[in-house]
Image (cartoon, rainbow, N blue to C red; front, side, top):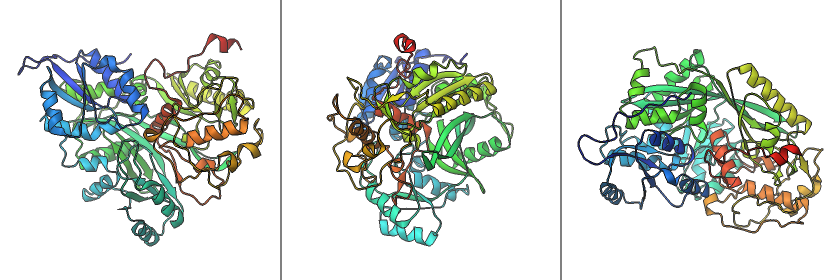
Length: 585
């Protein structure tokens, strides 16, 4: 049972206009704001911050259009936007960022409308810029990552030489999630990463002008989900990542294999929560939701990044399944409904609110060790196991498409959302799925292309010239000849330094029926690797001297899944629903 509150009134006492809420870019997990606002009978004004976002974002607008009372497109003029909103027959009581691209405009608009729940823009850069947020922590005496920021490759290399501690992490200052995150082991890799990323456009439509070069934070990664009101903070969920180091087909791979909802209290949880509350104070987050990633290192918790929005994609739903209350419900309560629920839960002093754990929740990464054309849908294969804790399966590859060995989150086979009252049941079910992965029953593949092979992606990036780079290391039991599948001449050996943004892609030709298996595999790998979130690191031999842009964020990986497979996230099409015909096969 999910907990929801109704607002006491949807009519302002100071105007005859009905109250309404603005959601800027209501995509990804922003759709849960739409559901909650509709349940409270609050009209929703959709603002699109840009029409130059990726197809994944823009298609979500159409999918949820029924929820909007009206839509306004931002034309890079805040005064014009305010005028358009003022002419609407609504009194705006709250502004929400629906997803990462909408955070900046939502903050600016809240301040311009003089809303009591505005955070102000004085420290906006500290909440958005990955480098500036670390500097702001240092100014406030909060532990932060050691770093250097510059767009000049010589300056970056000089700092790296003087620092003399490898590996290092490089990332754009203003992007989101794990877009363009590189783990570097040498000055050569740093120069290559700079050449690849600086001057390009990130998925949010920003030109990358500088790189943030940071120390590598060794430790365990956590996510702390919070909602704030009046400078007070509630922790509504804490998650921990579990990572697998080394795979039989890729000994150097580091793959996040699950994230799990933790109990609300404990020594680590208390330390994390205290640290994150200090981070939120330092960056000026007084109102609204936040999704903070933290690495627990030998010297304690160190910030990875703050994201002033909901937990991405499945996050609000998973929090609701585990604790009984969606993070979207907390956010709407805090920003639009007078913080009634917030005030009921908030406790002054050291005794903080402890969220209830009604069910255990695990987001499991599906890991494939083979390759070929899928002859059965992955979700159907998981559902056929009839495991009690499997709530939903999100496949990264569809029946008829080519699946490749999993080496990182970007090449993972998908996700299984596990929800159950018993943690032991979840562990048993995870073990069953892992056995099915290992014995080959979960990923049923063929070396023969289907008669009518479905498109592998809704769009294809502009053609690139294959480079003479090492080929993928494939398992020995592959139904597709390794030599043919991995030949640079077939297009697998693509340059890891050229990854055009998804929103810059144009429809392109795809392999036709009758195309050879090696050619199809090459095309499939090319398309999966060439989008803006991509990592070519998993497609290179372990001794390749190239930077490794990797996905460490599972929510960003889910966006990759949706974008690559052409899905728009709604609650109607997130699952690969088992079909009677397939189940009979």
